[in-house]
Image 1 (tube, rainbow, N blue to C red):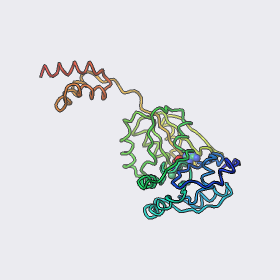
Image 2 (cartoon, helix red, strand yellow):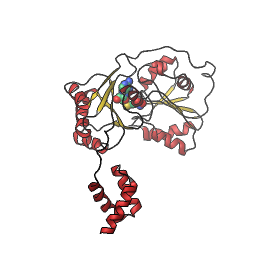
Image 3 (cartoon, helix red, strand yellow):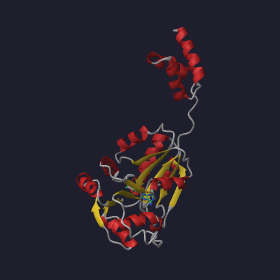
Image 4 (cartoon, rainbow, N blue to C red):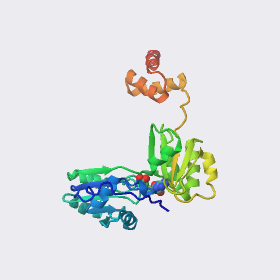
Length: 293
Ligand code: SAM
């Protein structure tokens, strides 16, 4: 159940003025309606058309604002057909894009609309706001300096394991969206593919039953093995630990392979990047190897 915090429109006068034509990307709450920004509310109240994923969901938000607006469904199944008409409207009208919740385009439709609007010379304005991925990261207590957003992983076991293997070497916190019924299997696949990293299951952000459960992946997989929790979920996984130090033998093997098809300086740089060893030492070693061959 959403919590509703009533608020005045940002500025009564501004809410009546006509918006310049163009495309307005409007982030909407992921739970608590009080998170709708006054600027977002003002644009939704003034847009001539709102492109929506599901008109029933957006109708509730508009009801909360006390307005009725013209809505055009824009979702994965009709986007290609509807897009040209929306772009044509933007030349003379303010068209807002919303998704059911959060920031449009983030695991939601919209990027092609922005791409085509830009190609047509339309002004694109964004109204930033709630996004479950970013909000979850603020709750997880895991490093935030580098993060990699995976959206939803594939549901089939092999495709999911492949997608996880692809990011196993990424030195960043990973963020993914998941549903309750699939949570246990996904956490186990993450533990198998990434090792027992620290992670967080963040649920129902900004709603009554908001919850963050932190722990190593294997413990979280165990906790949710039998039954997934209710509600909407983001999984955040910490980055891998420090790389084990490479030995000079490893470096020799890599340098020999690199020197076959690149000059000494570039080979030293590449191997330094791969091993974390000192580039100058590797350059000297490359010269020795070349001399001894
Ligand atoms: N565009 C949205 C955004 O900016 O976060 C995400 C849309 S995606 C289709 C929906 C998924 O986001 C849900 O299945 C869930 O994984 C996550 N999500 C959305 N709201 C959430 C919330 N209040 N708490 C936790 N996760 C949420």
